[in-house]
Image (cartoon, rainbow, N blue to C red; front, side, top):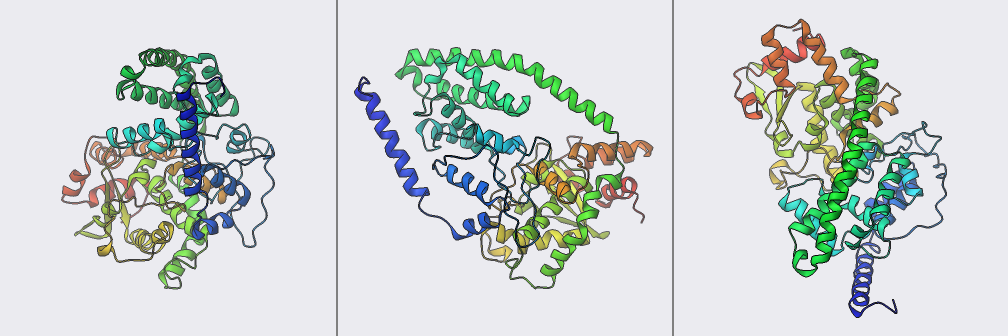
Length: 477
């Protein structure tokens, strides 16, 4: 720093002040409820390290192979790293081990290699980018994208986050290569590249950079072209990866409806035991349930939507409290209710039986408030009706429902069934139906441009139930 300019020194000092301020604000105060969730985690050390690092603390001396988690006093679910698409967003504790890669999960490898280290999200470059994504682009998962950029910036320069990385093409290429070598899929690496590219497009097109530093602005534009070239090269790899996955899916064949919902059958006894506690009023409200029991309720209901009703995971992730409260009942078939989710990419509806409606309502009134860390309150007194309906144990909206579904399968040692496999099974079952019935099923699966309001206007909502539940699952009247 002795040879640095006064402006550079001042910038470093200001950055250090911000880092200290952030550490003082977030690193010294801990919620008791958070500590309780960490202590209940099967991988207490790993969960604590993750929380410390997210608050700007540095944990050194982490062994390459994570220490074996202590066996809990009560039966619990062992830990598994979430899929790469939600490496630091889910935060779920109801997890299972991945024994496919010599006992070292993707998360552990990424952490041991230092690829989860990142600059503070309070840095000016990242704060402005986050606001752009959240408010201008209406990106609900903006934090994940900002974290991707923060990790990239840390790799390029651990000391200071800046735009000077645009002059380091070779090191940038090395970073994306290392992500692939660590085990991330080509698509995930592509997502990292897209995040960095969007970050630069924001700073070159939506800030005063072109006026304050024309040379750096031009370097940034050249770097975007550099990223374009990398994307072109990796897009072929992504296509091959997608083709391989499709071939693997083809080799698996089409499942029967019984195979699709096998995990629901396997977990039903445990699930009903928890529901019994809630229904009998043994809990106050839900506070006497263990974290594993709370998550079982959450995951089971997610599985009902994705597997039994063949909906996309996005339907689970985007469903809101308002949409649950606004569910409609068919006057001619009082045993069924329809829930419409409007914020999904293609507006979706799914039909619940009377029993399933009771389960969802118990989750809403008893389990969800605990997930949020709130006291129970009446629906009419809740002003936060636009919150997500499904909430994780970290009091955040569900980021990746597919990961939750996979954990449930591993917990009950049932072959994994994805949302695509479930939808393909039900689509295949329509081959023997009439064209009219096929159209109804396509509408139920949101394969058409029909909106949620159209389903609500149907004179007989039961027609969707007839087409889907009775004909596809083999239910009788």
